[in-house]
Length: 486
Image (tube, one colour):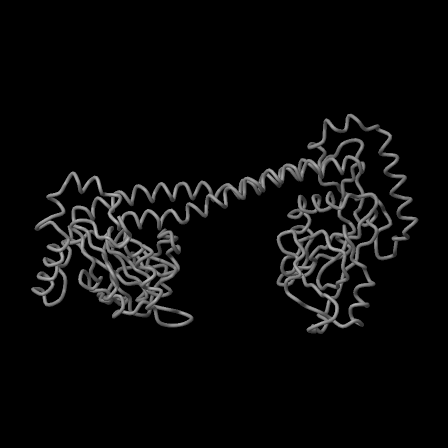
C-alpha cells in the first residue's frame, strides 16, 4: 500500500470538519475552585507527551484568562508546535490560552485524533503554516484547515488501542536505553577509583620489589633539585597532612606540587582578540576531555610571549580550568603548537608521572577536590595553592603505565557499548513516527478490516461518519455535540 493510498472505508478531510479548533470556554480565577488543575506549557515534556508536573490553582494562582477543559480532552500546545507538546487530560482543569482543548467525541475517538496530531504528516503541515519567527504558533484558520485522515469510528478505537500498546513498548525500551549512559558513567568512575587505589593492578604488583618506595622517594627529590621548582609560595613539605584513601605499600603520597615540574596559570584578564596572530584559547575550549581550537581566536605576539613563556604548554601537560564556569574540567595537551590561554591552570608533565595517569587521578577525584576546595560563589576559583597541595597517590612508573593500559582498555569497551546504545536510541526515536505512519496507512489494522468488513463500509464508513458530523454540527448551529458527562 502506498503512503498516500486510502484504506477501504477511510477519507481525507480537514481538522475543522471534525472539531472547532481554537474555540474554548474561558475562565478567570474567580470561576474555579482552589484545587483545580492549572496546566502550563512548561508542564508538558516535548515530544513524549509526558506530564512533568500537575499544579493546582492554590499553588499557581493566575491573573489572565484561561481556557477550560474537561477530562479526556486533547490539549494541544499551539505555541512553538514543533515541540509537539500534546497530552490527553486526566481530569478537568484550566490551561494557558497557548494550549487548545480539542474534543471530537462521541462521534470520533479523541485518542485517535491525539495520535494524528503527533504524526509526521500533521507536523510537516504545521511547520509550513506556523506564523512568527521566534515564537511560532498554529493559528486558528490554519488549524481548521489542517489535514486529517479519518478512519471509521470502530477502526479508530482499534488503532488507538494498538498505538497505546506499541508506543508504550517503545517508551519502555527508550527508558531502559537512556539509563545505560548513566550506568556507563558510574562504571568509568568505578574503574578510575579502582585504578588510583591500586585495586585494578593488585595482582600486577607481585612483580614489584618493596624497595621501589625508596627508589620513588629518591627520584622525587632528585627531580625537584634538578628543576628547582621549589618556591616560597608553595609548601616545602613534600607529604600531604591528610590522605583521602588507602594505597598499596609500594605507592606513596605526595603533594602534587612537590612532584610536578611546575604548576602555574595563564591570563586573568582577557587579551585583545585579533583576526590573526597567535592562537588563544579560553576555558570553554576545554570540552568533553578535548582541546577545541574550532573557534578561531588570536592575540598579538607581545601578549602571546608574555603568556606563553610563563608556562610553555607542551604535549603531555594537563590543562585545568581554575576560574569560572567549568572549573575542574581538564584536558591533556595532545598537539605540538604554540598557544596561550585564560582562566586555565597548567600542570607541567613530570618524569615521575604518566600524563594519562595524572588525568585519570584528576577525573576520579574531581568531585572531592573541586567541590571541597573550590572557592567563590558566582565565580568559582581553584587557586594554585590548592592545586599544589592536592594529595596525589604515586605508584611506580611501570605500574602507572599498566594502570593506564587497563583503564583505556575498559574505557574503550564502555565507549563501544555507548556507541551501540546511541545507535539504538536513534532507531528507537524514529520508531514512533514509523509506527504512526503505519497506523495511518491502515497497516496496523489490515487484518481487522478483513475480518470486520461491515464495520468499515456503508453507514459505518468514514464518509458516512463525516456526513453525520456535518449534519449534527449544522443542527447545533455550527457547534459539535457536547460530550455527555457522567
